[in-house]
Structures are given as structure tokens and as C-alpha cells.
Image 1: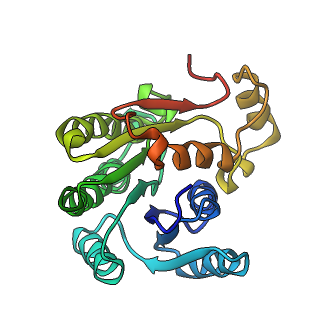
Image 2: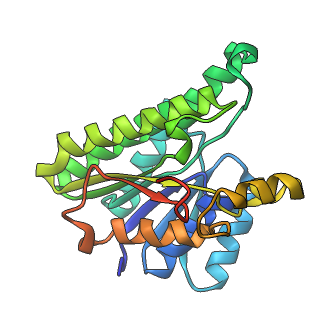
Image 3: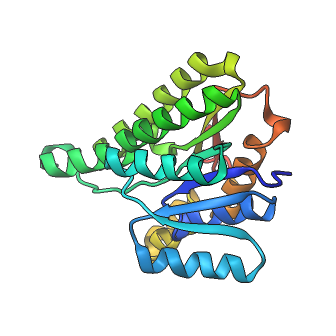
Length: 244
């Protein structure tokens, strides 16, 4: 259980982030949901609170250093600590490398990798003072390389390297840091695929089906718990066997 633990989930207005935030709420955590989509964020938090969860909405652009630092300072001022950080926010701007623009490269690296640096750096400063913390970074199966995703794959591979470094530097301060690599998960984005593309993706998965946001959320909740205190620097796939 995560009773009254203070958690942040970035990119939590919908999709995978929403599913992760809901699972942490179910386990008893006080969850601060952040996103830049204000109307969706407020809608999600209202939904959670109607279920009796302790959820708070905070609009934050995680690719902006000042916004991130301000948010975490506000949380510590209000609650006195920060126990769990889930770096989930991410975007993609797919293109084959020879057609990829500099803007497509830069924006994906900024949102998908640099934001993890901003939030993790600030969180670690807090967590080292309290001698406790859990950081869970959402990478992707694409970190191993994927056609048309040079920017996304590079960012998600960077998240893996950053995760392992955070884990090594902070293990003696009772801070763990792990990465989760979701495979093909049913979200608003993937549900928009054509039937042919959907079936093609399913054909690559030994389990024969797409995952759910709660499948990732279950692992996040475990890694955030005291039961996982001796697990750090790991990269864990949640993909029904798609990545072997």
C-alpha cells in the first residue's frame, strides 16, 4: 500500500499517465497529476475525486525548467515531502531519419528526455534530504530502435541511461530509480490506428493482445512501494512478450 505517499505523475491527463495515476490513487497515495492539457487534466482529477481518491491537478510544462522547479517547490511547501515521481510525459513526431526536421528532433528530445532530467534532478535534491524516494521513468520498447522513430528511440534510450545513472548515484540514500518499457498499450493514440495496422501490431505480440494502462500502472505501484526497496537500475518490459 501507498497510504498518504506523495506522488507526482507527469503527462497524466489521459492515456497511460491517467492509468498510472489511477493505480497509485487506488493504493492510497496522494497523487499530483500534471499535464499541459488543462481541460483534460481537470476532467480526470474530478473523475478521480468522485471515486474518493486524493488527486490534485497541476498544469505544468515539463519541458520548461522553471515550471518544473516551481511545481516541485510548491508540492514540498504544501506537503513537506515528495515520495514518488513518475516521469511519463512524452510525445512523438515520427519520420524516417533522412526526412526528419531539426524541429522534430529537438521537440521530442526536449519533452521525452530533457524533461526527465529537469524533474528527476529537482526530485533527487528533495529525496536525498529526506533519505527516501522512488523514481519510475516510462521509457519504451522503441529504445532498442524503431523504424521512423530516430528521435523517439534516441530519447527513450537516453531515459534508460539516465535511469541507471540516477540509481547508481542515489542508492545509498534509499532512493530507487527504475525504467518501464511499455509495448503496445491500448490508449487513445493506439486506438486511432487503422484496423490493418492494429492487427499487424497484435500479430507481433506473443500474448496475442494489446496491453492496458493498468498493466503498466500495476508495475509502477509495485516499484513505488516499500516491497520494491531492493530493486533499482532495472529496465522492465511490459509488452506481452513483444520484446524478448
